[in-house]
Image 1 (spheres, rainbow, N blue to C red):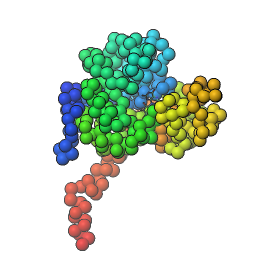
Image 2 (cartoon, rainbow, N blue to C red; image 1 turned 180 degrees about the vertical axis):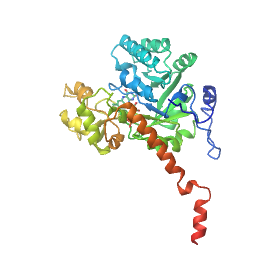
Image 3 (cartoon, helix red, strand yellow; image 1 turned 90 degrees about the vertical axis):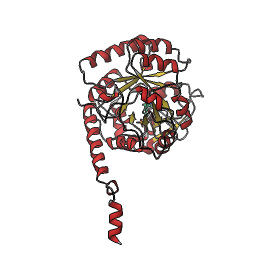
Image 4 (spheres, rainbow, N blue to C red; image 1 turned 135 degrees about the horizontal axis):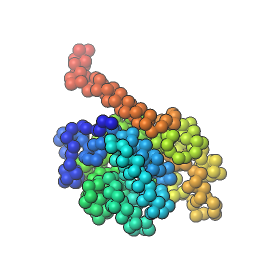
Length: 355
Ligand SMILES: Cc1cc2nc3c(=O)[nH]c(=O)nc-3n(C[C@H](O)[C@H](O)[C@H](O)COP(=O)(O)O)c2cc1C
């Protein structure tokens, strides 16, 4: 499988050194390259870590297809089970030397009672990419970098990006509006532009992207990679019901409802699944209120998805979807390359000719 080579690989040290340097808009953007181990990716894309739906099968399928497959450590209910999943993933990927690297998502605040045990497992297994959320920790970053791994952290604003970059992370994941799960609030254009004013390290955009052209758009905007979650729920390897996959093909972006009432943070849910679970999508009661069964129904029967669901039209397998994303990516690049404005002087020539 061909790796992603867009020039000489930028070493991690360069990324850290430049992470907090303000970007001069007049300056040429650095050559967009991905550092090891991301240079093994076929596309600059992460199959996002998703509560419940990211399993070892999905991660292995993503990595074998050339995408960075990620899963939350907490998707297994015990630390021993999490370690068994890691061993399973490593065993399967050992048969595919060209496979892309995988990532584990860790909730870092000390309120996560499993943090110490799960992090010990991450370090012992030398997990190549660690995505952290809810608290950037220099200790975590140092420990992962000491065995050659890299760390990304979720951010939603410029201020947050500045703060997190100081922890020494190797990349930031900017959550834009429309993302599935706990979404961001800024338009992706606004988020990337303002984060790029203060951070010129590896930037990954997340939110409402479902096609290869979307990945090109993210890179054109100034991000280096895309992080896509919702699109990959509608794949044959994802262990959710056929009913959920069918709904994801049928609905549009306006069927995504945002509420803080089910998880405590603003999160995105599919309107038809709320109705089927007996919850009025326009008057969602808070978990912890009079409806004692709401919490268990919310995690089991109410489905998360971002606005990118509107672009989903089928349920392919991971390899088919990855091939399609590559095709769409190349087609989008070709389309942009022949845009008249892209050709030097073309617009001026046309104007002077018409006068
Ligand atoms: C079903 C679902 C579950 C998710 N669970 C998590 C999670 O446990 N932790 C997390 O950081 N992000 C979670 N996310 C967010 C994703 O990691 C990613 O940021 C998001 O899916 C990107 O936006 P998109 O879904 O529009 O592609 C979840 C997203 C979805 C759709």
